[in-house]
Length: 265
Ligand SMILES: NC(=O)c1ccc[n+]([C@@H]2O[C@H](COP(=O)([O-])OP(=O)(O)OC[C@H]3O[C@@H](n4cnc5c(N)ncnc54)[C@H](OP(=O)(O)O)[C@@H]3O)[C@@H](O)[C@H]2O)c1
Image 1 (cartoon, rainbow, N blue to C red):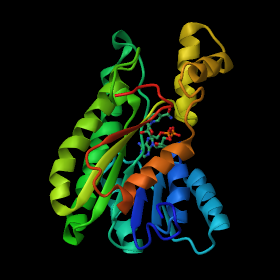
Image 2: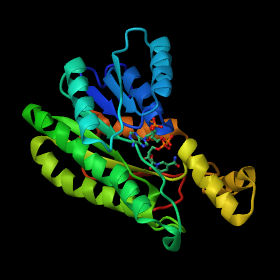
Image 3: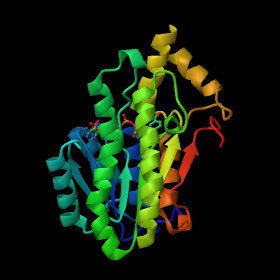
């Protein structure tokens, strides 16, 4: 059973971006599948809220909160150290933290480009390095990078964000080849619009550009999809959870789309 209460038993999952929509939904699901979970983000209040919700659903959940700015080497190292002190070796890493960094090329600042590349691309590599040595000792583990359809094709005003997600998929594919030699699987998920703060901001930016209201643009975004609706964070979490289980044992270096049919290839 893929989504049974013990599918991820005795696994320790580190989930970044857990104060945000996709990471939050992923934490809730992995806990219900039996994993011990370390959640991180910068927003302590949101992480506390997630912890309360988890405990209300599963009183004996093993959940550890650690706030960190992932762009800081010191804070990232502290995150990994305290997580491992709490629940032992991290066997599952979900790199979900990310920023949008949108803007037309002529408007982009160097800082904006570098910040977007840093969090969306460099940080997942550095965190993967930090957990890989111990995963290798155990010869087991799985890493999921939350990429995007924007890692598969360009979008208007999406230079910095698309560049970072294309790069993240390049990392996923290259590292997957190295990691699988040690029984560790690396994959990416590629959502289209997801109904989270980030997805809504992206729709809102487009609404502003095109002189529409948010509601009008949201409807257009939904109607434009073959499925007729944008993706929920829970649907992305389901895909991540599947890729983490033994049911996905021979899925390596993939970029799995969850987009209501927006892109097919
Ligand atoms: N929503 C979409 O439409 C969509 C589509 C495709 C792909 N994605 C990808 O999915 C992932 C999750 O997005 P989401 O929709 O869940 O977005 P979200 O709700 O905006 O969450 C973003 C998360 O990233 C964290 N974060 C941002 N900067 C950080 C930093 N410097 N250090 C540590 N954490 C940081 C935020 O934490 P704090 O708020 O606590 O700082 C938050 O938890 C992202 O990688 C995004 O690119 C989203």
